[in-house]
Amino acid sequence: MEWTEEEYQEGRFLKVETNTGKKYEFEEVEQFTYLGSSIFSRKPNIGEEIETRIMAGNKCVAGLRRILRNKNISRQTKIRLYKTVWERKILRKIFEGKRTEEGWIRRTNEEIKNLYGEASIGSVIRAQRLRWLGHIERMNNVRIPKLLMERTIGGKRRRGRPKARWKAEVEKDLQQQPIRKWKKKAKDRMKWRRMVHKAMGLLGSRAKLPTFQKFIKKIENYKYLVTC
Image 1 (tube, rainbow, N blue to C red):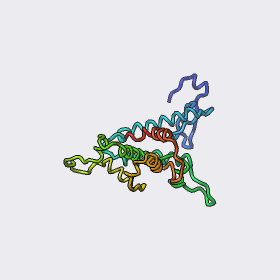
Image 2: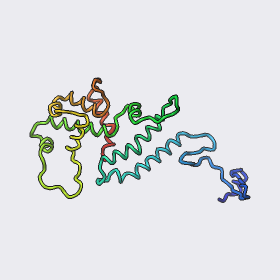
Image 3: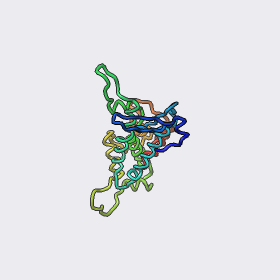
């Protein structure tokens, strides 16, 4: 490093001499980054630190953009990546561990879910599929969406691993709940809406049903998460 004579006179440097006789000079600065955190020489500025962390997070997301938009990677793999890299790690930092008589222990995924009080990305996607399934079932038999869902497309599939079909994913959702005689239940809009809420994990079996507008707002809040 090189400094001007004025900088030396102002004392904007620090001389350090090691045991081996080597001498180092360090310039005095207002701020520098150490292990990912901003260190301030005088008054800390938490606002700048927050902006720096947000920018670092945006860079990580931008670096994964190609992966998230890659059609060759299944949606289930992308959801697993989201849960592993973002959702659970961030929530664990927020809620931390819990203190017991033996000391601090790590919280389980179920405990974090109850503390967070919001639906996971997987539950939101499952609820959207079930909501659309009930909407199609209530359509007239001549509507195109219902005809496409009930009929099978002719021809042969390509070689290799077959792509997951929307109908097959919905059938898995119906088995997980489980929901029996779903066609009959889907005819009742209010009853089906309650099942969709339950699939999202927002309501129990005896919970009070919120308004439809609140439910739509909850879905719209997660709209950007299910586009990949």
